[in-house]
Amino acid sequence: AQKVTQAQTEISVVEKEDVTLDCVYETRDTTYYLFWYKQPPSGELVFLIRRNSFDEQNEISGRYSWNFQKSTSSFNFTITASQVVDSAVYFCALTPINNNDMRFGAGTRLTVKP
Amino acid sequence: AAGVIQSPRHLIKEKRETATLKCYPIPRHDTVYWYQQGPGQDPQFLISFYEKMQSDKGSIPDRFSAQQFSDYHSELNMSSLELGDSALYFCASSLRVLNYGYTFGSGTRLTVV
Image (cartoon, rainbow over all chains, first blue to last red):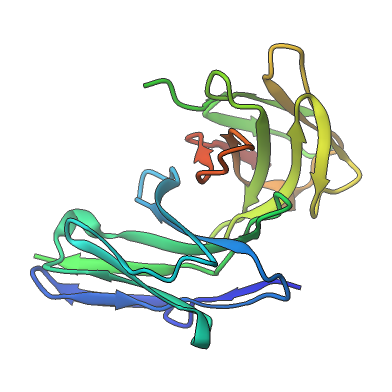
């Protein structure tokens, strides 16, 4: 069974603050993919990153960075110097490499205030 | 770049009616997925197709059916609609061999009244 937990339901920060969104997962699969998606108020799901279970290298993309810790089954997402446009619901998701059943976490609603 | 196209964007139906949602994947993508996202909920996997054959099945009600056609577009058919079917329905596509994440469409917002 797979499960993704995003314990933070809502986070509110002031512009330029750094913010970390937590994601903890459970899976019996030894190989899997982890994802982060952004869902802005307009409703679409925007792909942010995919991480393979066998690649624990952290990644940075502009103001975004991801910390994958297999030992703690966590895949946290940090936004540095947050901006109002970062306001959205962020979903962490997991799928085994050998099937298509992507499981999403409940999402974290991030509000960045000016 | 071409994205996943879903139509219609919004749909209002009455209880017990039928609805058909369409999805046009990114060209050359061979896999299509359908997700249902209820108000304030995370997306739930319904069903997927690979090369026009059903690939995986999730929490899709028996009242729903889907298929993928020869041109790779997919349709989700929903019958005997219930109020609880009101949701955002996402289609996503991917190229299975790469599996570099799914590209989602903008969704169809179905409201059952």
